[in-house]
Length: 257
Image (tube, rainbow, N blue to C red; front, side):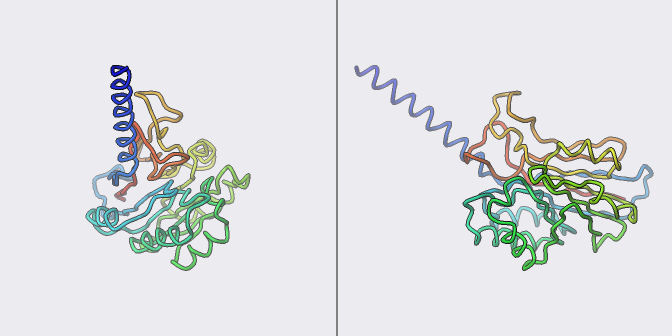
């Protein structure tokens, strides 16, 4: 009996340690830096710096994260790539997160599949109070870089995605960034245009992975022919507040042009 009891204690200790590790991993504050050039010559004179964060869900944007971001220098724009919130997240936390992110640079937001659970009007009012721009199958110029345009689509879960409408004014600009919450829309976007940068989250990198195996692939940043694509692991978690094999992340991207 003593052997059985000791075995149970050991098993509980092992599982407890694994759980603690997964919880700690899910709460890491990782800021990844990426850079690429949209020019093929060596005379790039300007740089656009953006901060991209998706899938915040229930997490708090705190001063420790903001200080990490600020160490990278000035930021021209902040893009919240959907799932800022989900059902049950206190409105005060959502407001505080948006307020803090708005302090970093010009703020943009696109819908994720969970955001509307807290109410469309709630999100709209919060963004309005903090000077954020909601991109809902629409586009916006970037104030500090007038040759650049950011287009954002609605999320597929809304049954309201209209890529052609989102892109209808993009031809007025020399450079284009397209943000969609789900990367499944990338292929459809490329049927219309070849953006300089495409951004998405949603997949959480699988969130819990065993080696190569997970519900979704790990996020990644790739560059090909002066065009870049980012699929982020996201910053928060969904369903359970745990991660394994897929670290949370947000991103600084520097674009030379």
